[in-house]
Image (cartoon, rainbow, N blue to C red; front, side, top):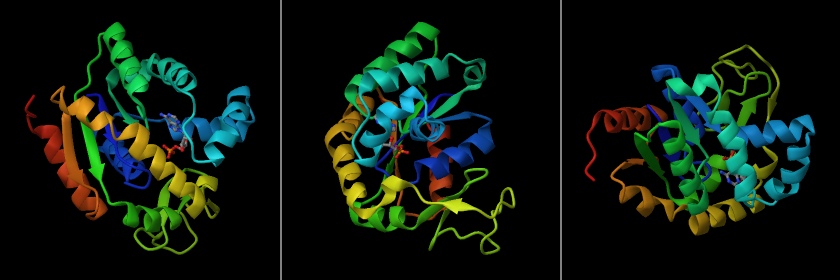
Length: 219
Ligand code: AMP
């Protein structure tokens, strides 16, 4: 099963991707995580994208398409994957179609997480993650069971993303509405799009996503 999670920054794509990964044994492909890893490693790619990401803008399509193409070609992706944060432009969506066709793979579902902009700013500004294992948390909605200790790995160091600052979030939301939202009609026309209310609790959203995966969607 190959899925795309589509929605603005802070909609819960990473959280739901993690749950889907655990439930269905799929590989989570987050272009944001891949780029952050490149920046942290100080690689050539990292140097190219650092300032773009800090500004909340989108990295050029050719860089992203090359990066995801290389990742999807790896053997672990054959069992199915969840794309989280890709595609983000029509050019990327068309490149993905081509990539999947070349590999004889298909796209089973595109799941839109719908959340209003005002809620997103609050969600994003409160989020942080475990430095050791990457597990995500939030100041209000998802605190570690024991304060200061990661539920998953017991790590005690946490960090907040540089681009989660209020002024950068605004640029990221604008990029979403201008460049990524046009993908909704693109996938609706292919009969693979399902929409979930992303304002609900993590568990309720997960339930709605599961229901969508089991439903036949009209074309
Ligand atoms: P994310 O973790 O998905 O919110 O991505 C963080 C940042 O990485 C974005 O604001 C962009 O600068 C960059 N990025 C991630 N995925 C893409 C993509 N598919 N296309 C262009 N830029 C991306």
